[in-house]
Length: 477
Image (cartoon, rainbow, N blue to C red):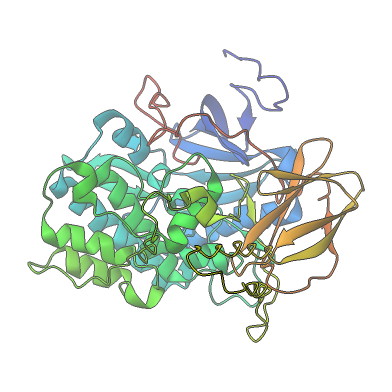
């Protein structure tokens, strides 16, 4: 038997027998686990094995891993990946046994083919919506719908969709969830506004928003909101209008399809489709659905044409930011009755009457009032973390920072010496208590290392190339 040593740091190696399956080849690797093609030692049946990384095998992660198997097996839908078993081996490995898919994920298809045809997008949308309708009826929200988690295979010569990766699925009827308060989970480009603003407790409407964003990317080549920073992407979901995909594509799209996508992307969940079944019905209709369009308020026109309006960066400050990967939002309570009031400008000086035949002197311009600020004391455990307001350094903790009064959420970030970051989002519209940033214990998947901001906008999609020679791709990233 050919045995290939494992990569450095891995316990498993190709040729190793895990339970009843011999590991033949590694299909891919994600943040919490690796996926292998396995062959049953007696039956010869080939399956995919998703093995949890031992260094992240905390009680919570194991429970979430089991949650994935439970979520899939409770549904049994043709457009959802089949998971056969969840096993804990005597040697300590935790792994899922699931069907081995042959094909490619939607991310790879978009990277290679660019803009997809409207008819193809409609068929993909109907199948994904059918899978979502099934999981929502079972009281489950997927919470991470994106092209990477949509796998395209063939069935009877037709393209067939499989919904993958229920690793962060949430059971709506559970009194105690696996997600802690303050933890936001998902992928920024596809997160619904309420998923950002409600500390990661979205309902089924968030999946419908993510479906709309995914279909938008299929039609336009990129999600509706892309930027070099996570903060700008999240701000887009919350407040920016969606440019119709036909304008991004540069050609007309079927009105029915475009209206379905835009209705999925309504800012207010109440304005979206009530259910995924309604999405299926709308895609098969001959009439476009009604969409509530979001428009930005017009900027005031300056009486002095030579005076340029403030830049967008100035208008949008202070912006809030999140770390890409596992994201943390901790919204402090707001008092709607208290509002910051800027100090009134001083009265203009009185000018005495000028003598006859003399031009009176113009009074000096009143100085602009200074922006109102509040002092916020920032602590970290352990002390000495570098503190930031978005990307602006505030000093090392403990530090007291003067922050402009605003009703806009902003992100305060504590960056520890080893690169671990903890983010807390506040609304600086009133005096605030001391804010403490606790560094997570080793193995806690809440804080992530802060990525460097790219110098150019990110590509619309991940590059292709994960497809192996046999045409099988890792279905769980």
